Length: 163
Ligand code: 4NP
Image (cartoon, rainbow, N blue to C red):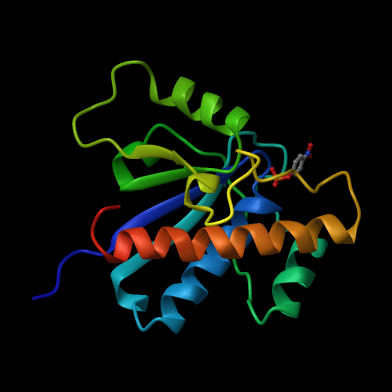
């Protein structure tokens, strides 16, 4: 029996560095596990500064180096995302606070759960995926490795149904 795909929204601040990378890496990892039809993913930013733009060229480059092609266009997260998605994955604690404000104190029944990306890190440490925007290329490589580990950890959880 087939059921509706699990839908995941990855959220950072600008939606041009961390969350589009997470979206692309998550979908590629699901595909390589043969689970492509079981999951849907998008990404969004808590801010609108970069709405309408493709990912930062440094994000596109690090993804390409690891064989991941990014296609998303930046947009700001909205209240409706809590109805459209099953799970909303915040990249850092500031993103989570912004999402909680957007959702309000009394979420509708069935509203998406907000979780932290690094809750799924098999090598936990810092609770945040660091923002690489103001740093150099090494920061983007570091973010890639964190995002990749967390996407695999998230898929492990979602795949055994405990989400
Ligand atoms: P992101 O990184 O939240 O991972 O997309 C940033 C992108 C842009 C800005 C900050 C962080 N900015 O200030 O424009």
